[in-house]
Image (cartoon, rainbow, N blue to C red; front, side):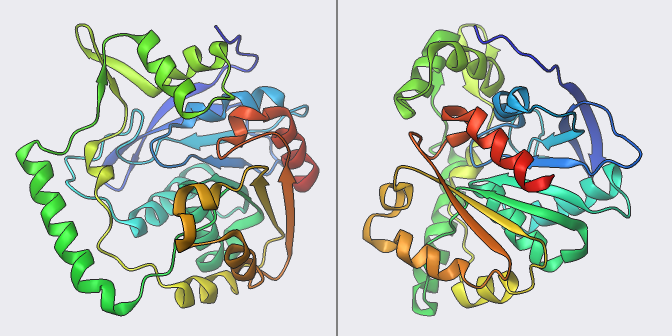
Length: 300
């Protein structure tokens, strides 16, 4: 089992009618900028433990479980909307850092939230770090009818019980699932993550701590022109961290390319782009020391 170096404090905070679960590491200093870590889709706040352990300086670190993930319940939602993550983050920062700017780090989906937030609330972000948050393929207006039809059908499928997440017969099986998804993930980390990524909600049945409604694709169209307009409003120095593997091609094939992503990132005024060797999309698991070093170098 992975040996934790820095113990997190688990808190529940009332945020927008939900009881939000937040992990905190360290203590808040009077003149210290908070480090806020935002996890990705089907992940949890504890996923950042390896990076936190690799930090060489003292930081006050805040990492929420997004609504419907980890220990944060959704309140029974049958669909999730991207703007809710922005409002949740806004409320969380009002709670932990009222009137202050923060160093904001996001991975994957969390990085996309961070990019939008930094554009619409530029005064709240001192430094912005994007870990593998490369956005989505562009969706054209004429695709809207199909998107809405698919969304309606998916909501019905969820209500009927046809849309569910897979369960596992043991914690060991969950760990094997994590290692199958990420071949670089060691056994020690996989077993540690499995205990935070899942729970034995029924005897002999381990369930992923993510609600099935997250599998429903949004009816909202991803408009690149809107995203670029938001990114042009980012004032914080921004670090874009990419994995050695071309994970954009892995996820989206020919629908979206790394070259297109790099072109979009030109809209960010103060951008530095770095590639981390020998890692995939879960670079905070594969190379936590390298990621931690990049974070500390950039924010200090």
